[in-house]
Length: 161
Length: 161
Image (tube, rainbow over all chains, first blue to last red; front, side, top):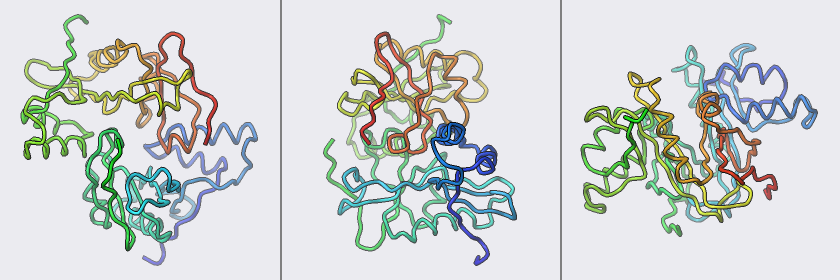
């Protein structure tokens, strides 16, 4: 699928308008809009979102955030990892490999990845090489964490609380 | 709505079977089933879930978890608070006050409550007296946090990272 291109999304009014088509529209998006309105961030600042356009239309997106090793409770040895959330492909564009393209993009950083499988999307994550981790209520608080291990990384087992 | 009764749910095969009707069925539920199968927990152990039965059928539920003050990044003064998640009413039973009854139950502990508004449920939370907090990407990582303040409690503003 060489034609699928993943782009870092810039914060501007066009992107923010496109975000409204996604189900998981919430505080992150509203906060960007406020920051833009109040000139707290510049137009075309980099966002934590990456997306895929079909023509000029944003049809898929995800958010990636690099978590510092000191907060790592998922991987052994503890290290910086990526938290991936809001992976979403607009319904008419599903089944075309856009979700996989976004996740492949995330893997290229060669850091461990942690995500939360929503509403029985576990199979999707497993197809992409993710594994569920042992549920820990204190750490996971209702999430269904799925993780991807680069070579040499494994699940962290010693839980301290 | 005096007839709506909220019950602490016990971990047993009947409860676990009922959980399968809920959309947000994930690692927490699977973990309980494993623990029961392997006798790691006893039958009828207390779960972090509370629910409402209609006759013998579980029609609404939520999970509550008490977070220690040392992890509080939402409330001022920092204190123990409740994290509420997986609030869900089965579709045929929506609009009958079951969601409100569960949240009212949570408020009775008189601790601050934090939840994550999913998919534009902000209005629901606002009707119940919750407020959105200022989005902080490091802390909130894509969530849309809504909080409820008991008397004398306010939003924590000093963010250290």
